[in-house]
Image (cartoon, rainbow, N blue to C red):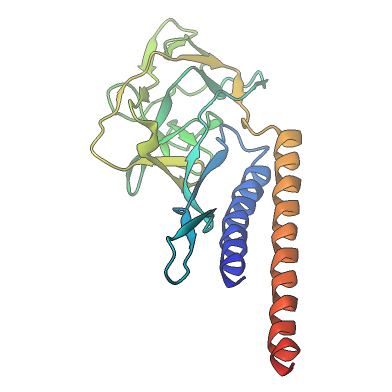
Amino acid sequence: MIRGLYTAASSMGVLEKKTNIRSNNLANVNTNGFKKSEAITASFPEMLLSKIEADKADQQIGSLATGAYLERSFKDMSQGDFKRTDNALDFAIEGSGFFVIETENGEKYSRDGNFTINADSELITQSGNNVLDSNGNRIQIIPDQDFRVSAEGQITFNNGLQGAQIGLVDFENEAELAQTGDNLYELQGETEPIASQAGIAQGYVEGSNVQIVEEMAKMIKTTRHYESNQKVISSIDESLNKVINEVGRA
C-alpha cells in the first residue's frame, strides 16, 4: 500500500513538470521562431514480488511498478509556418539553420528574424543585439537605400552596391543548444557551428511551431492524469487511516 503511495507521488511529480513544459509552449505560441519543448518519461526498475513460506520454495507473484521520472526534455526543431509581413527587415529561415547574434556574453543563435536598424545603421534584433554576417562581422545597412536579400542571404542595395551576406549556421547535434532567453540559444558542448544550407526569405517571419489545439489537448490530458493520481493518494490515505484507527483497535 505504501509502495502505491510513492508510485502515485512520483507520477504526480512527472506530470507537474510536463504541465510546466506545456504552459511554456502555450505562452510562446505567438513568439517568432519559437520551438516547442517535449518530454521523455522513463520508469524506475520494476520490483519482483515473491511469496515466501517456511519449508516451501519461493513462489513468484509478479512484478510491481515503482514509479516514473522525467528522463529529459528536448526541443522540437521542426519548421514553423511563415507569416508574410512585407517588411524588408523581416527574415525567415527555410530549412535547418540559425542567425548568429552578437551579445555581451558572446555569440548566440536565433530563429527569430524580426530585425530592425540602430542609430549606426546596423542590423540588430529587437533586443538591440547585433546580427552578424557570414564572416562574423556586424551588418551595415546604407541609410535611405532600399535593399533586397537573396535566398543565400546576400544583401544588394538599389544603387547596385553589394552589402554583407547574412550569416547562417547549423549544428550536427542540436541537442547541445540550450535556450537562454530573448529567443536565443547558446552552444553547450564541444560541437562547432557548421555552414547552413538553409535559405532566407525576406519579408517573412517564421512563427512558432506550437500547434495550440494539440497543445491544449495534451495539457488537458496531463491535468486529468494528475487528478487521477491525486484520487489514488486520497484513497490510499483513507485505507491507511482505517488500518491504523479501526483495524488496529479490533
